[in-house]
Image (cartoon, rainbow, N blue to C red; front, side, top):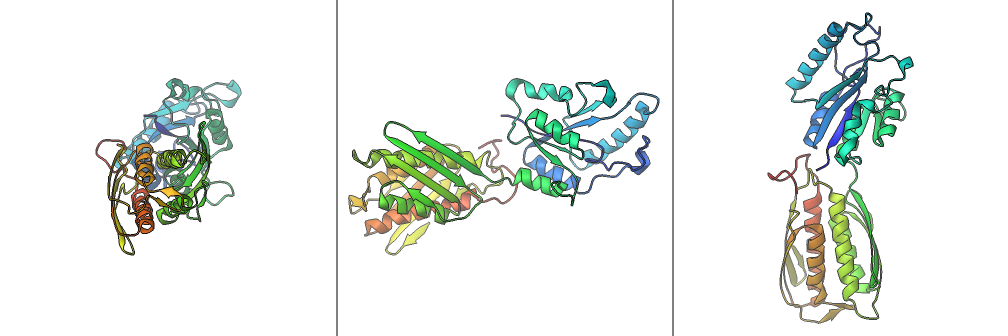
Length: 357
């Protein structure tokens, strides 16, 4: 699994920058506001922390190594006492006019993190208090945050943790075959009216229920070979929606994972859902009609099987009733409400003992 790294500046970011610029900082050592709770939250979300700092003249007569080490040891002791460890502490001692390739914004100090394709570039980020830190982030191809609470375009530690941990869960996918052309967009953290067009009116209505009662934004468009029959359209839409939901969920930290039931007049659907990463599907029920609004009822279980396959979910549906329309709608609404429960966030923990879902 790729590593989520937060590259963090030291002075002015982890600890407050001394106003007088003196190097003997031990008595003046104080943490940046909000840094401990923010790093604890990020640690729970799977982040590792690497300190990358320019320390001009370190080891020279104006900046003895002993002074630096006293402050550094005190800083690390405070963070360790709070359960926060640093994977590495990397420092460049060179002055700006030395043009060293390890001095930020150059990336020499962290080049080993760029090798081997093990860095999660989408999730990893840089935090610092200077313009050079943002340039450093750009050179790494990562998101950069400037720590300056209250300043336009800058952030506090609380805001940085929120943006990284609670980032919107979105996905946009397209599936194009000789039989269908499907485009799907989902946003699990946005609620708005679904936009659906597959060419099958009742199927559109059911997909709208999936987004509306699932509590997430859903856009689906499909041009399929309906002149042949409805099978390819229903199947490929299900596969693409499942893939999009799985992509939007990411590593699934903080989700409730499980979802469960829905009555629809005389019909009732019981739904059990586990976003386990292991596809499995069980359907129990019999529809009294072969078709509802242009949608063959035999394709309803097939839709949910295909959805479970690409979503990576264990899904069990049991439906009973006398009206096929109500029974199908109960299935879609029941799965939607189960998804709403399962994808909702309740913290930062990964809901498994296996280490990943």
